Length: 246
Image (cartoon, rainbow, N blue to C red; front, top):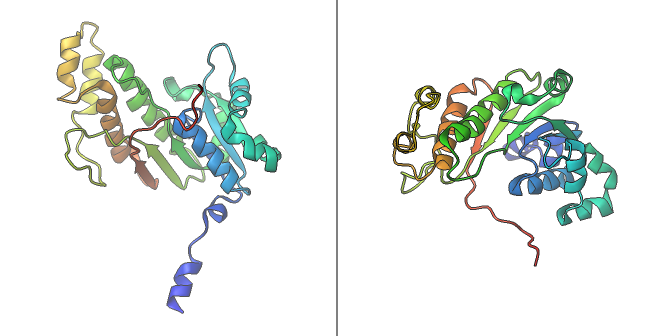
């Protein structure tokens, strides 16, 4: 009888998302596209999926959504429940910009409706200049988290990190490690106009590249600034395409 009571307290994934709206950054990436399709297909009662999307190659965010939905992975939804594709709503913006570059109108919608936030967006170039990588991966994460703190119905913030966030560890355990450097100190140093390549390399504290370094810093920001928001850090390993063109 006790086991039955415990079981009744748990919801299926579909039940959990029924009537809820989520906000996703990096929804056009390898992981992001698969996540969008899976979430939409598995949760037919979800309300809306808002996707932060920057303009690219002269295509605006709405056009990029249309192009993405032509990918093979979305074909089963097109066949079986094409109306559900309308639940994917583009939010013009960019994690590299102050306040994510989101208009006040869209910000109000997100604050009112969103309960689950998934932050996939990242600059995955291994040797991006440190100043750029910090802005994209560290400050971008902080901007998304700041938005979460304003959301009326926030239930969880999910930060997608990487299994290579702590390359100094032989075995990566499921906890947040101390950052390789002080985030604020790194920010102060990279603001110097005369910071050269040798100084940047020294700042990495032995990390192989700016990507792994800034993802570790971002984990620290999430750990220190999530406050009372239930938060999850996910560390995928190597990610590759599921379909290739020959």
